[in-house]
Structure formats: structure tokens, C-alpha cells
Length: 228
Image (cartoon, rainbow, N blue to C red; front, side, top):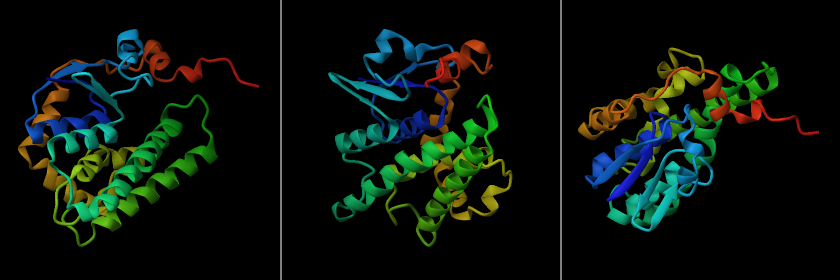
């Protein structure tokens, strides 16, 4: 049985959706990152980068959400496009992994969590987050899913992060601009697997308070000595 190490953040949510869509047997293992569960020796043996999500499938461990999606899709043969579109699928999957997710996370961090308000950092990450999501929205124009008519792991990768768009951009009405992304979100949210994926996040009471311990566990660089 697959062990799934998760919390309620966007990246684990993507994997939750795949697991629920596929019907694979799995055992959820909550990792409370504000309490520092990710820094234990046991979890670092699974993911040396001390991040969720991660899975353990027998002797195989996989970390990074999009790598997990690809691993599970290839394991099951499900939620993949036709073979002729494999290269295109990989491009979009990596675009989300290396661009959409990181820029969205940094846009939030520099505006809300950084000890100093750095105008250039805030401007850069806001601009790039907006630009990346616009590319996704443009891709969905005239398409049912990211890969056309086929529901794939690329859509799951978008679904994990997209609900945060108004929050990371500090733009409550952002979906009035990103109408194609909103259409995809609504389509996936209507699936029973999405309801179950959201419910998984509520099966464990994760710490929500951003106290000093949580700050140290999530943002240790704030407390590290300056590098000269």
C-alpha cells in the first residue's frame, strides 16, 4: 500500500486528487510542517528536502508533487494524454513545477512573511506570478483541459495551486480575468474525487497559528546568521 505524506497545502492536494481519482489504495500520513514534522530523521530519509508531499510505494520513495503525479500516472497508465502529446504534457507539467508554483509561493512570501518589505522582490514575484497564470489561462482558451479533450495530471497540477490565485495576487476578483482557469477549477471541483481530496485535509488538525516555532520550522533562513 502507498504511504502518502501530506498536509493541507496546494502541492499535497494535487496528489490527493490523483489518489482519489485512481482508486489506488493508500495510507495518509499527516506531516505538520508548522510543528516541524518534516525535519525528523524519519521523514528526511523519505525526502531529504524536508517538504511535502512525498510517497513511499514499497521500496520506492518519490518526492515533489509533479514527480509523484508522473510516477503514479505511469504506474497506473491513467490520466496521461495520447503518446503523441507526451512531450507537450511534460513541458506543461514542468512549467507548473518550476514556474507557477514557485512564483506563487514567493509572491506570497515576500508580501506577507518576509521580515523586510522589499519593493523590488514584491514587484518581481507579483509580476511573474501574474504572467505565469496568464499563460495557463491562455492555454485553456478554447480547450476543455490543458491537453485538449483529455483530463490529465497537468490539470491536477493546475487545480492544486489555482484556488490561491486571488490570495497570492491580493486580487479578490482575479477570476474575472482568469475565466478559463475558473472554468477548469469548477469542472474539477464538481468531481467526487475532488470532494474526497479536500476532505482528506480535514482528517487531521494541522496547526494553523504562525507562532515563533512555526516560523522557525517553515522559514529557518530568517533566523540564520547573515552570510557575508
